Image (cartoon, rainbow, N blue to C red; front, top):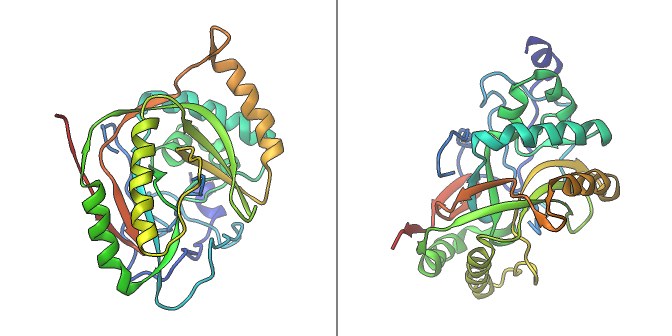
Length: 283
């Protein structure tokens, strides 16, 4: 691991907004029930949040989803997701194969090159797949400080009580952001959980509309993103992803589930502050 540490110096955090407080330590997923299309909100933490990696200032630059304006904060509404330990190994095998075919991929959130992680054995799974991921319920957009209390209150009103349900992540997919500056390798929800998440997106949309914020995509495709590359690399990534889909097809038509996670709540991140939006009910 020392070789990797020496290869990476400390990178500056390029978050999508100025933060009202110093960034909290990033959560590392453990085995539990807890834990876009827009891309996920990536707010970097201190470079040593994992305890054994530093990030390089030579990393590819992030591209903001919107220009920085003093007094604006990035709003992101999402379902937190952790990938259970058991399926990570098979997912890591595919991601290594993807990396060998398409150089330049980075792990989401930590922004470490997957090529470097491939040399680190089992730590690949922990760094690339052991973090908290997000299913976005709304676009990541800038808001003003005077909108925060109203937004959080209305999101809680619309989404506070939710029944628990299971979410099947069944399909590898490739997404490109609106301005084609980044491409994402994602795992999409196409069966169990899709109806529930779609209703939650509709509820979040109502709150966005009341605050004159852009609504979510007309035909949302809920997913988590696990890797990204600069620019539009969809075609090259798509070939490898489609090959993986064919291998994971059962009986000629049924897609094998990659992993399953239980809905555990909804969170709203504004700048670097996280608000718990809903509690769930098993009844």
